[in-house]
Length: 108
Image (cartoon, rainbow, N blue to C red):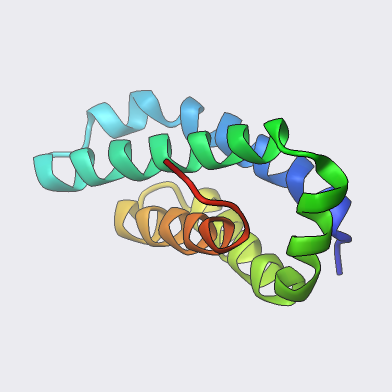
């Protein structure tokens, strides 16, 4: 299992992968899925940015009790990103990870 320190790094990588999906997203015929993806991607990006801005030791202490849940959510999002054709799974994965991060720090 990844350590809490490594999960923030993994989250940064996932944000980069989500940004790389823009060309594929443009091909999505369902506008509501496209908008949901964009909204959740931005929420996730902001959450990661907020984590990076916080006092890291304090954040790591808050993340520790949620480590297993966060690890599972990150793994699920990674799986969804590997099969980029399923927009719904990617949106769901982003929501799951963002929801856990929101329990660690208040997200604006």
